[in-house]
Length: 109
Image (cartoon, rainbow, N blue to C red):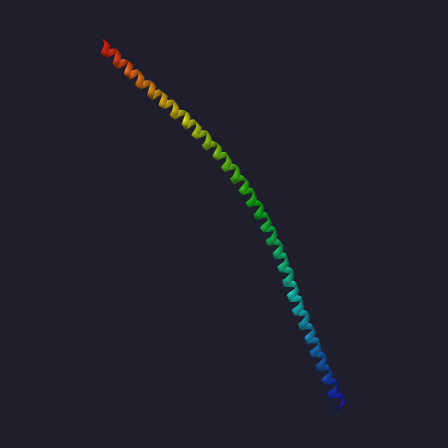
């Protein structure tokens, strides 16, 4: 191997080493950049999930309070209905007694 061939062989080896190093750096940079983006995306998704869970908890609290309020309204309405039915029952009984009294008065006259 003469001097020219040695210089060419050395140049080719150095060029291949440079190309391999550059390609390795490019791959490493590409994967590490994507991992960083993935972490950013994961943080954004975690924040969104946290906000969604808070909204869900607020909705559950609102729903429970609304359910309690409607339950109270139903209880009050049922109590009013029972009172109205009792009043109607008493009014019917009183009306029946009045009819019977009027019939007796007409029968005695």
